[in-house]
Length: 423
Image (cartoon, rainbow, N blue to C red; front, side):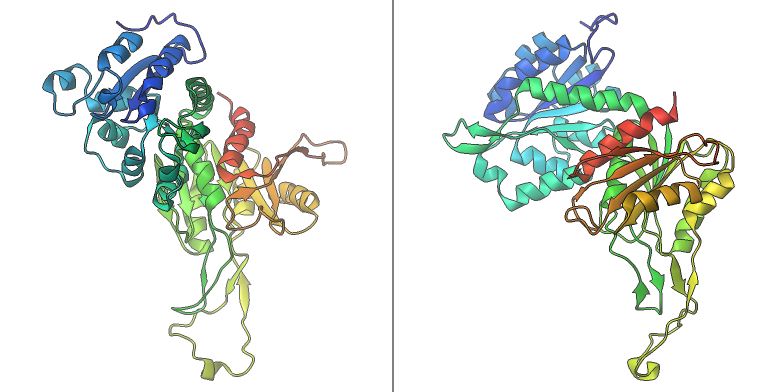
């Protein structure tokens, strides 16, 4: 049985693959599948061996209207649904419940059963609803797996605090099916907005060499740019991420180009401003304004430098200004810059918006607690260029976001930027 194409609901026309793993919360998967189908989704279910100890495949087949996948090596199942076919047809992969074991496999890229093989082959956004004993959830290694998944753009729903089946009380309960469906709807709503768009993002610092050992750099971690790249890829965009020297994993579905210096970053980014190359360029990178005028071929020795060595600097390429100049009067690609300030944030950001000929500037006060380099949170002010007034300038439209996790900031920024890209 296939869902009627005329089905209505917030998930109409969308295919959701639901992975069920072996925890007591597996009984909730029946209600989850029912709510997903009620919302209009075409639902396919994959179960681990452990999940089948708690709920039967027949139950979920009846509710979804499709055969349930349980065995990677079952030739009949493989011919009917196929793990690659499941991965390809998914608009969303939803694992609920996700045990500590499955969470680890998803984090490490292991694929030893049907569910984890589908997950590894799937390019669709991934939503995970963890469920386990509170002590298991609080283990450092489990938190590392959860954080690694978040860093790759995976969304987690829960776990929730409350009384657990084992008798303990604490965080570990699987989120309620209605809450999971609500988050799935929100994720797939954003997917429509960027599908097929060509997105280029720069992230992280640049390092300008003094000699083969030392360099001039800055404190940028790249987390904001990587969060934007992950969110764009989840939304269906074709994402190229130009990354300075950072210790971050590449988000799923993102093409990454690693660079070190401002000159290397300029060479990787500037071609994307040519007509038809990209729909949007976002410069989150903290690019060095200056570099040493002379790079020593050998390590500089303290004894040879004297008591007060002097360093001669020369300007680097202003990549954002060069992008604005090369684009000229064209409206594509959309040009978004970032401004890290320590004072007069809106004033300096508005000046940068005009001088660099950007469409949008995202500014933050890096001196503010929780909003600086290397943090997992950010508070940003977004300035949008307006049509020029009689004096040749117009005050920008301003949106202020509260202090949020950087992945949440990324999602909110795409909500603001998406409509500017058109259909």
